[in-house]
Length: 224
Ligand code: ATP
Ligand code: MG
Image (cartoon, rainbow, N blue to C red):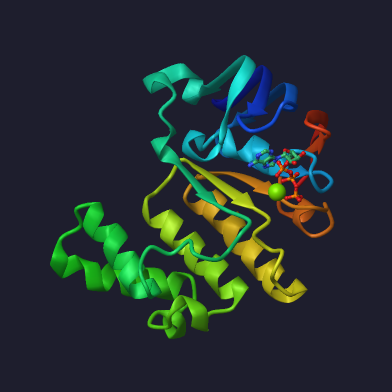
C-alpha cells in the first residue's frame, strides 16, 4: 500500500483562536482509499480536511508532522482538489461552460479540443442541460455536481469533499456518492469525504474515521 497522507502527532491552531483545534492527530490515508470522516458539529472535520489545502487552513501546525505523497516533492499540495461545504461562490465564471473553458484553457488544452472535452465532461456528469445556467439559477445540489466536475478536470490525486450531500435529497445523494465511487475506482483518485453521519456513505467507503473534539476517536476499515 502506498501512503498518500500521513499525520503524525499533529496539532493545529487557528490564528485567531487561543485553543488548539486539532490535537495529536495520527492518521494515514493510502493511495486509492475512499475514506469517510464523521463527527459532530464543531468536532474538527473541516479543519482536518483543510490541512491538505494550506492556503485555506487559516492557522498553523503547532506540533507534529504532515507528510504528503510519502515525502516526495516536499509536500506538493497542488494535486489536491477541495470542494467546500459551502456551495455558493465557488465558481470563478458565470456558467459551468465558461468555468470548464477557463480551467481547460489554463491547463493548456488546444482551443479546437476544448469544445469536445466540455461536451464529454457534461455528458459524464449528466449536466448537459445545466451548462449555460448562471450560478443563481442552479440548486445547491446542481452546483455541487458542477463543482465536482470542475475539480476533476484538473486530474487531482486527492479529492477532498466536505459534506457534499448536505443539500441533496436521499436519491440524488446516493447518485452523487455512486459517482464519487466510480471516480475513485475508474480514475484511481483518493477520496476523503466528510459527512455528519455514517448512514448513507458507509456503503461506499473502505474506511471510517471519527473526529471527536479535535482528536481521532476511531479509525476502522469497512468491508465494502
Ligand atoms: P461542522 O459539522 O459544523 O461543519 P466541523 O467538524 O467541520 O463542523 P470545524 O469547522 O472543523 O468543525 O471546526 C472545529 C473547531 O474549530 C470549532 O471549535 C470551530 O469553532 C473552530 N473553527 C472553525 N473555523 C474556524 C476559524 N476560521 N477560525 C477560528 N476557529 C475556527
Ligand atoms: Mg465542517
